[in-house]
Image (cartoon, rainbow, N blue to C red; front, top):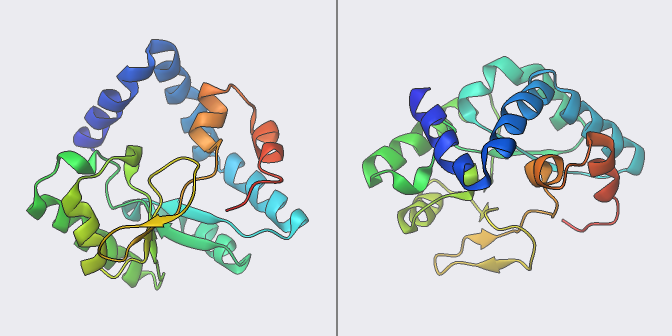
Length: 187
């Protein structure tokens, strides 16, 4: 947990204190109360859309009812790692351990995952090799643009812009406005 907090501050410092404070108080509260995800699920049902939701594996047990609701709505659950940390700074062994921990947790809860979104969109070249080793099909680590693939066959499927954090904090949208902005986006 301390490593995750440290990585959060390392990542956030590039955006300044205003964004850091806003992120700490607003986003944490919204996710804790599941308001944001419930609004997206309602929007998806109303518009007959399917989305991918990336979860950190260590939090699955706390969110299993919400995950069941997401899956029953026809949406995809994908991995956001085990711990929410800067994966690009980890050694091969520590990175492999993160993959193993996440895989065990997803399997224990009978959740099949094929995609991965690295925390803070941060990873290194060994990460791409481990995606293949752990039988992932794609990574979502870029914002906007076209799909592509890595030499080992792993697909890069870009994140829709604005994504949650960017829309809520950087663009200062409220949840309802952010959801409406996704209406005509592909992906």
